[in-house]
Amino acid sequence: MRELYKIHAEMCKVFSNPTRLEILNLLRDGEMSVTELMEKTQLSQANISQHLSIMKAKGIVTAERRGKNIYYQLTHPKIIKAFDTIREILIERLKRNGKSLRSCRVEP
Image (cartoon, rainbow, N blue to C red):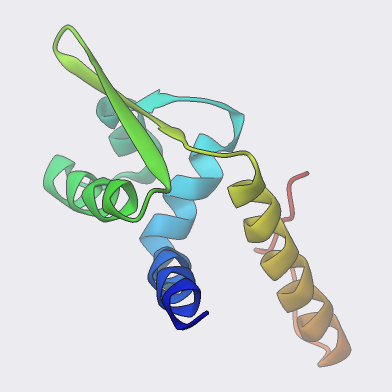
């Protein structure tokens, strides 16, 4: 069981960074190239690549090279289910505390 907890904790580290969460959310509908992710996030290629490398090492995304582009996609649809569940809990907590939710959006 300890090994499972260790692997679980390692995978959850992906959820501890706002940029990686943004990338996860962008990949929810399918694969994207590094260039597309750069355009959507307004981040540098080096920054995006660093986060994708971490996500790939943790088994969250896979990469496929096609010509000059590398395309990334989620390894499993349940990753987005976990993302959405955590986000829903946070939004409920914010509502209970009377916080503004203008910038918080839960996408199914």
